[in-house]
View 1 (cartoon, helix red, strand yellow):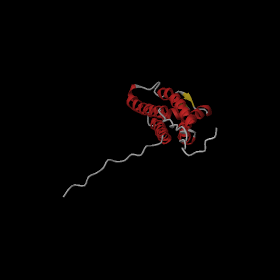
View 2 (view 1 turned 135 degrees about the horizontal axis):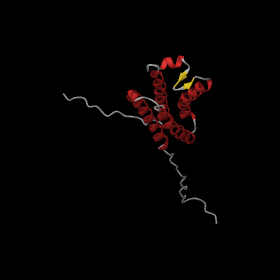
View 3 (view 1 turned 135 degrees about the vertical axis):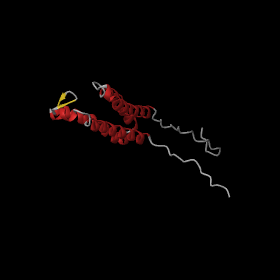
View 4 (view 1 turned 120 degrees about the horizontal axis):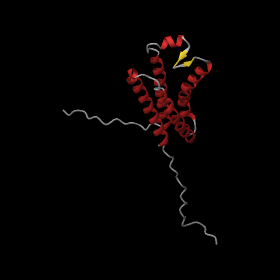
Length: 160
């Protein structure tokens, strides 16, 4: 009796738009969870009760800025799937590039005690931004098929 053979799994190509949306979704969740887990850092809740977050006074402007920082990746999920290809490519390249310094800035002022937490979280976020940049940059071009001239019909009526 022969053992059944298994064939390799077939992986259908994933559209660039879906790759980008998935990467932005992952980025957004990491961003949110890093902020959430930051609340467990000793002294954080005391600072919030005192009206301070990351050395900034809590204000409508600060909270609006925080909202914008998470709303942009959330919107990028939808925009990556719905914008025309050329515009989506450009927007993804610009926004992902702008988020690199924003992501690195999150480590400013943190102590070395928290290096593993912030190093891992920022490293993963930067990796996802690199995936976004690479996917958008390497977006496949549509192949252009030129109309071939119609073959000459040997029996066509030729007029001078």
